[in-house]
Length: 380
Image (tube, rainbow, N blue to C red; front, side, top):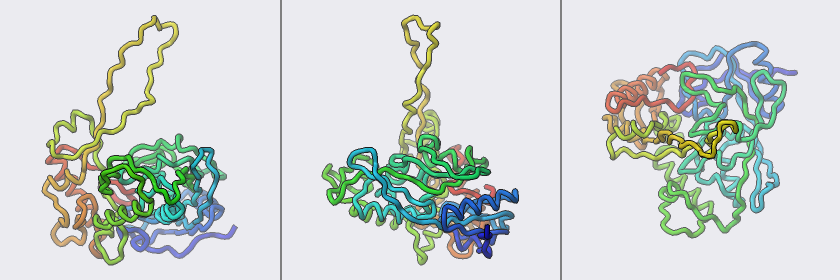
């Protein structure tokens, strides 16, 4: 087996936040077979490793990564029949650009991911993060992924239900301060989409309706939805643009805070908030020998509420375009949740800004914001 190792490229050239030195080793994989070979080669050494797709959800430290970075360069989309009438399945390779997949689907009248237009990164990263936008999430259309577990000989197919998908999370995600429940690499993703053709679809989700400015319930074309979403993202600096420093970011740097209802009630009433859907699968099991014809009243668990971290940041005294003295990192001029590299900023400068924001929000509201991107060689 020939080595897939290449000359390491500085990670600041491969990540949208533009930080990071060249790693110790780098391997390129342009097919699933090459990806499996590269993983086996790295695992055999016992070195630290991580895979790199679009680099849009990584915050890499200034010191060279002492291990191997495997770049997933696979691509391709396959159309498959769906067992459900009026639907189709798309299987996309992990290295395929996510927005390229959305473009493909919209052009053919396949609905279900159009509101996620313009999200950077690759298809393989999408289920890890359970990406979503404007009320639409990948978990709504995800059927299964093909993945290879660390140390395994070959990939296997895993249904979406086994991925522990939640709000911007899964069992595959590296959370700040922890390790994933399941360390694995996705090789392909299969989605089940509605075939609407040129007829478009009725938009019912309130969050998406507000973003599109819809009033009635007439069907709207998918390409119209995509165009409006791209314009909205561009206005927030969330579309990659070489000439716009506001897009030199990892998107939303902090997660929206999810807190118990009693904590949400302590926040100012102006703070935007949304109830988190309860787990409707929860059930009480009563052993037959203990059942006397009456079902005990179940205590209602306290609900969770998602609150706007952007509002918390701005109302802690940190506005858009905020920067610390002599720093090349700043809050986006368009969106308070994005930390941006204004040109030549290193990871230390961005970390300093992130910690300052965390401290201000914690001081004002008692909440500690958690970072959204995966941190490599960085501590906050």
